[in-house]
Image (tube, rainbow, N blue to C red; front, side):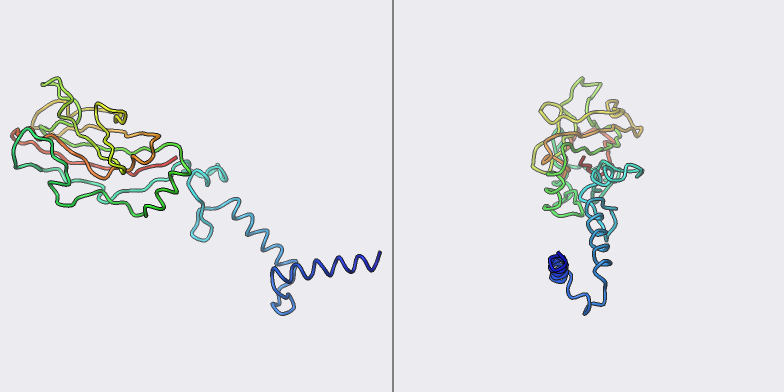
Length: 227
């Protein structure tokens, strides 16, 4: 039995030597190396979200650490976050215009790669993004005078699909101050939500130029969030 125990100990020693290196050469006791390995394993199972110990998503971090103030959503802010309030049309009236045609080669950009976006989508079930449309004699969604939605803004998603009044992808309108024409600045707030994760974030939008005097608008674009 004593010989058998010695053989087992020798096997264990050689196993850890093959995994960690020769402790006599490295100068680190096997017990300490086991403790270090246990710590690394714990960090993988319970990430802290730091650069040294990152998590896959904010939802993973919140599941591991419910005490965190924020969690459950992984959000990426666009660039730019604002379109300045001004007149953006000087051409033929009563036409729909993609903003990328007004501002040459314009697109909302995001500071992560396409691969990272795909990874977030694989680990999520829903996505959302908020947009505020600031207006002066410019229609964001519904026009009260014309009793029509045809002048409303359309948002172009990541995969080319449109968020619009008629369609499967329809924005949720939280408030619609822009339904009233006038020379006073007003605001319409949208919430874009979908389970079709390829449809977000938005990269462009179109507006309807009606040719009115003082027709102006600006946008505030929130981060896209996956959860």
